[in-house]
Length: 356
Image 1: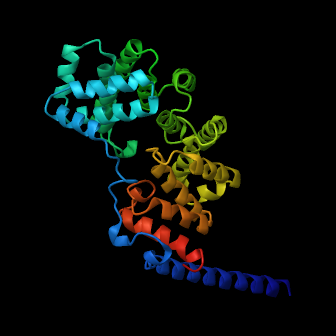
Image 2: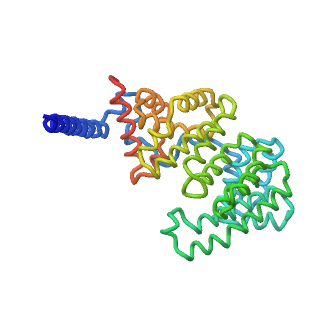
Image 3: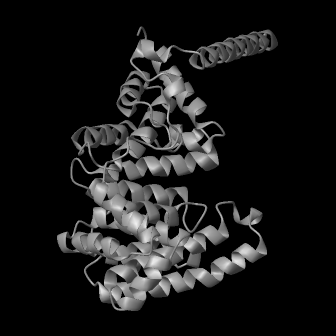
């Protein structure tokens, strides 16, 4: 009798699993061929995988970049000096990244600037970060097991140089958090201990406690693939969000933590680490954030993906409508076809949300 009951229960479970699998397959197929325009979304053929959001019109920056490519450093120096004077540290960091990227491609203008003004703090800040970018480029983005001995050796040579340059930049610009952000970004490659890293981190937060990009780099240090664990990473992300004022996008750092966990654990990470209070906080901060904030689109992409993975389809659809046709951001860019991954997630959100 007991054997018959167990067999019957097992059969029911198998039937349910078969039906559930079939339904998922049908839904996925429909999601890949849904009518985006019927739900107020940009058609798939118009999706742009180059950017996370619409480009900003910045003529002064564009002219400074063009001038640098021609060996003229003065426009870049003027823009960076202005950002330091205004102490707009978020904007300053963005400029440092732009000009450091440029220096990695063509450093003639920066070499001339350094020669003309060797003690100019702005030039040293950019130089330090350019050295860091060169070090990471030498290592590559693959797992250490897939990285050659030559790459590891070059990385080991370049990274301390970047750290020394950042320390010099910090001496020349004592109130600027930017050199310390470069040091935080270098810390995981240098293998600094937890205590050493915390000392660096305190230097950043003393100068710019809500520095978003610094938080992102710190999260990388605390993740399991570097020098932390899921527990330490999420503890850091939760504390960062909890200490941020309402409307701060720092709460989006938690979404980056979920993304990092999902890269290792798959979709189980969403069930383990995503909670209603976290999503409520992110939603509230996104609603209050400056619509012109450059970090907003990337966070919105992660938020929409989390909402789909957690079955909050109507809310996800609302985010996709705000995102528009831009899909050059994580998590879509981790797929072979970013547009297809983005469109599939939109399709699931749309079809599960009911009628158009």
